[in-house]
Amino acid sequence: MEVDTIDKLTSHSVYDYDGNEKTPLYAKNDNDKTVLKLIIGFCMVFCIGLLIILLIHIHYGPHQLVPHGNVASDDAQCSKYGTDMLKIGGNAVDAAITTALCNSVVLPHLSGLGGNGVMIIYDHRTGIGKTIDFGAAYSLNSSIGVPGFLIGLYYANMKYGILPWKTLVEPSINLAKTGIIVTKSLRDSIIELSTTKLIKDKNLKDWSDTVLNVSRDQVIAVPNGLIDTLTLIYRHGPIEFYKEMSKELELYLKPDDVTGYQPFILPMLKQNIMNYSILTSNKGTGGPILIDILSKINNTNNMDTVSLLNGIKNLSVDWSAENAGLQVSTTDVFDLYVTIISGLGSVFGSRILTKSGYILNNALDLNYKHQYINQTARIPSLHLPFIAVETGKICGRRLISGSADVRDGVEILLSMLKTDPQDIFNVNNIPRFRLNYSDIKIEYPNKFPNKIKELFVKSGYHISEAPLPYPTSNVVQKVGDISIAFSDIRGSGKSITI
Image (cartoon, rainbow, N blue to C red; front, top):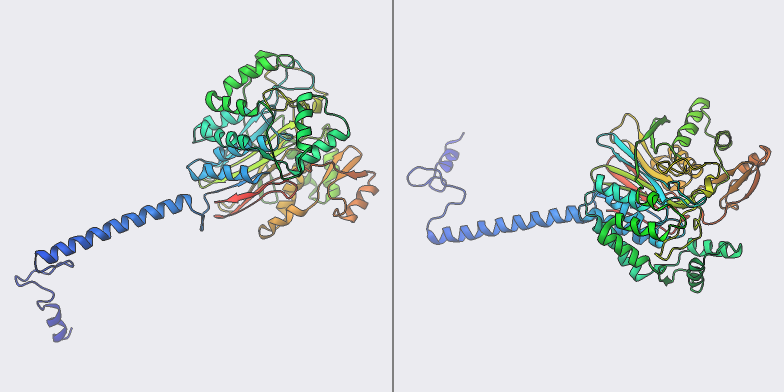
């Protein structure tokens, strides 16, 4: 090192007169020290404040690289309520429950407190998942089953959720007090029932007339009694609600069957196909049917539409029923994935609107071949929640979706598996079909491919148009830390990513 450089390093500008090295915050006198202390204090306060602001932004602000979560459903407001739960520290289970409850208020012809459903919860980090079966149970009536919708959601919250039950119910009460928007789905469904004169119940007829008296996208009041019922559920929980239900519905359902209802907790089913593990619900739902269909596809290695159709047709399942319902997909920052299917059976279920403001299911009407066994048995449904996980890749592609009917669900699943991740939105525009023995009901007949129509006819099937509303399937896709969510164009929903 040069002499002049050494002199600079050892000069009094660097070293004190006693030969000790000066500190970076060296001060000659008390005034300088006071100023330095003020500067240090200001910097510390500034840095702490900046850290707090950054943490708040990370937790509540819009995502940058790693999203906090997704909610995809059939209603924009309900999706927002779901993401609100994620923002205040809830997980995907809390978000799904909040959204499903909200949907039951906004779209009462497709889901509600008098209905049933199934949910799968999957922890991608541990690879552990469960089925929560809250399907309708047998009782006195030959048409109506004991509703499991509310107790199923409550159990999921108690077992797997984070936020208090009241926090999840409150948004639906607020929405009910404000009123709901008349959707195309609701209006079309009422017109269809009115045309065929299938509404016999006075309560339902009066409320339906109210809906038809206003135009689409206008706000109407919810059915009488619903706000009080939701308030009861908010204050006292589902147990008290089921006690009240057992009294109100004693002409339809055995009181002990209502108050004794419990959801089933079962393992998820799994089937591998096309480098994906397909996770779905257990017995009594569309899950085992999906597994059977996928097994046949694996054996034939043929995924064309006619082969799929024949594979569905050859299963020993009653395909005459028209299962309807709603589907919700949610994810969170913990890589917890949830998909819920809920419904009343067919559109408007039993077409009975209770004085408590909810519509009863007609689960047995859709399964007339099944006889009463006992209260613990479930009435079979075609509900199909599913999650697809790319095998061999921890951060590979993951798909969360489902359908109220396995026939629609298997079509959207295979469509997504065959579609490149960057083109996932294209599956939203693919028309689907519904098999009913030798009859095939197709969506968007003008858009449905003519070549496939011709193949159907050559195979001996009769083609007709599927009735409205078309079933919906809402989707969340994750690849690495990047997620995409979208709601089905067949519904009125909106997905939200935060």
